[in-house]
Length: 71
Image (cartoon, rainbow, N blue to C red; front, side, top):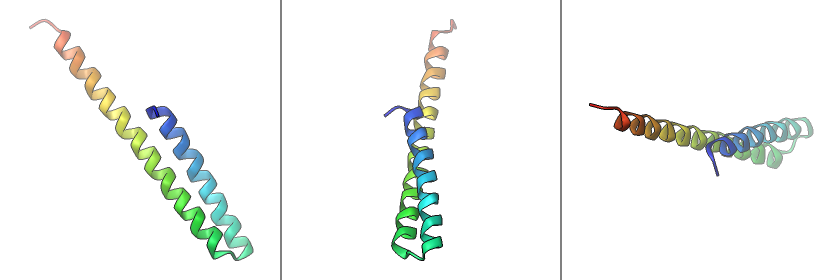
C-alpha cells in the first residue's frame, strides 16, 4: 500500500471503530465495544505506517536532491 492509501484506510478504520464503540455503548454490548476499540487501534497503526512511509520517502527525496547538487 502507498502512504496515502495507508492513511486513508487508517482514517476509515478509526471512524468505523469509533462508531462500533458508540453502538456498543448504546446497546450495552461489550463485544461490540471491544471490537470497535480494536478496529480503532488498527486505524491508528495504519495511519502511523502511512506517516512513516511519507517521512521515509521525503528523506530519500531530499537525499537524492542533495546528491544532484554540484559541490
